Length: 169
Image (cartoon, rainbow, N blue to C red):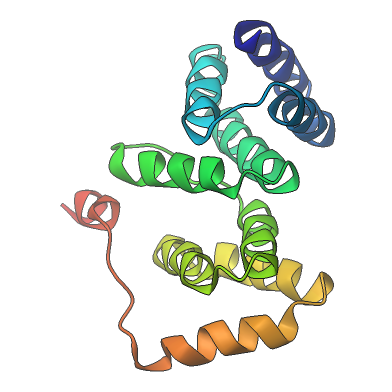
């Protein structure tokens, strides 16, 4: 069940075993016919188990589920989670490398607009996350696709999200 898997992921994240948490989440998402909303529910369950004062845990939880969703061929689950995090004050965005895995999956499916949207989210989150995502694209051999997506973005202003304005206030 999702509650059991959330507990397993929580234990793995608390032990700082990120790769095992991604593998656990991917296996669950793949085997349980999880929907895109199920990824968000799994995140909520994992986040509810967060140790107090461990902000890094929430970043790792979001990162593990974004990457697992991409690997399990459910990129819409990762996109839904990203939108939730953007709309939630004080929520932490996933690591750029995990978003890079999502962008690779989206590009492999021909979903350039969605890959561009993820990149815009990362651009708003800062240079470091954006660079890590780009590294994942190049490492996966998706450089030509990335060039097309980001070439199209040259004339498109980056959308600012409410999170940035909340932080500045």
